[in-house]
Image (cartoon, rainbow, N blue to C red):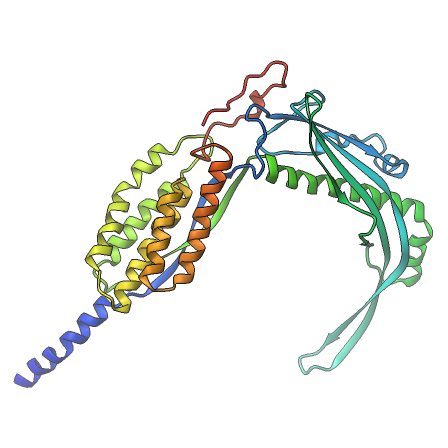
Length: 360
């Protein structure tokens, strides 16, 4: 009996150590947020019109199609004419600098690595240049921007559909007018798509649903296992409910109990040993991400700095700091204190009868 008691006494410190050990699991969550313009214009500007000046071959390539509605600036409304800003795209025709036939050999092997078959595939290959210039003006005629989007010094390639016939690929190249027309249409719409992406990033309001990660306690024997995961659940569920067109005051109130918990355990587990530092690291990480998505860049920055000082995986702290600084600058240049506000493009009107939401 004494031997049994002795063994139990000896194992107690080991069991306590296992219980205090902190293992972390990577946990994904989903959140919706809005990116603000990199180069904000007048806060009343919310409509645009778009026109293309095309070379003869480009015009022939699109036929009766109208590319005017293909440009999209997210968070703005397209008008057929008389928008707050006018975007003009000047496209010069393609010039084919080289035509060739691309070859690809497909080899199949058996499980021993022996070649059992070979097959050749051929496709028409074009090298070409074109030019595209962008001019942006507001409705008063003031020029906002002008730049060369694509210039003739850039070379592009087009690879047609593969076939098993070299003669078939060569025949496609013989009908160069048809092929060039087809490529011209693709190039035009691809350029408009890229322009849409650029203008949305510069002047628009891009809504994004992203997957992000945090670290949570994985060791079921740790006394904080259930409470840690439960409070993270409060935050995860609250972030999932964010609507970019609605204020986030109710979300902020919902996560307050979880914030209190994560701040409390940092004081409770304040030792310098590795496992306490890991627990504090996970807490700082969660709160920094939370504050970032709830438009509290100063608080996000504070958590990131504390994570660095905690001296466990400080590289993550520097990354979180850069996120917080980016958000702080984004809000400042847009003269806003939040990324979440009503933005219903269907209600926007042109400059002659402005009735827009432009509040903070």
